[in-house]
Length: 303
Image 1 (tube, rainbow, N blue to C red):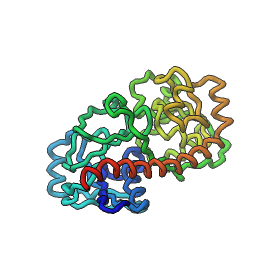
Image 2 (cartoon, one colour):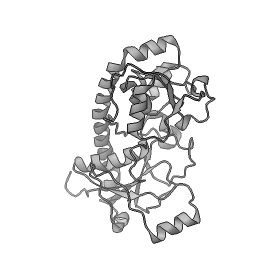
Image 3 (cartoon, rainbow, N blue to C red):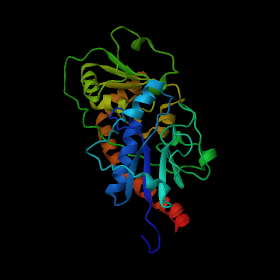
């Protein structure tokens, strides 16, 4: 860093670490990646997005819950006095309204399209980054740079079972789509809310996985387990349009149940593994660019 330019302190506002929540994983992984790259980064516990019942609030006052972190990650907690430091940069996902930490500099990391799932309220002069292009709001951000941290989840593997049968599915952010008959039978398994170990077992037992959510990584996980992975279309006219916004869908996944799509999914699983490995490495490059861009903006303001 050039002489006279202050070191930035990054403070990521995140919920408890949850191995089943992509957003929580990304936020904690960002702190880890920044620290591993020689920066100074911390976590700050996120307040509940939804209003809690009075009993729950009182319980937290008298028995404050311990903030959950992943011990495998380098994610220290920030001190309260760090929040007011002019060299501190708050990093919020799009679901956090305003600037509750009161930090002088604000980065908004768009992990999903603002307004699609939750209302949003941003402050003036924020700096924007997005996890993928569909999450961006160019009319507001001017075109946010990409920032992502894909990781291959080692919990998922093809166990080579020969007795596969049945269907499993997930809804998540696809709750507005009409249901298809294949997922509405009594035997179809809804994996929403299950642990990775449970889902890995189901992916290895079932023949087909349907995802109403067109952006979830569970589509890739199913393919890695040898389960035919089908995304239920609805948001895009064609596979090409979908892949432009979801590059990890390029291989190993069918966009709809057309026989050509299914043949493509089966024939390209090995290429999916290679793509995931490449994406994991390129994610670190987006973090490096994030560091450069935030230094250029906020270090000038606080120098």
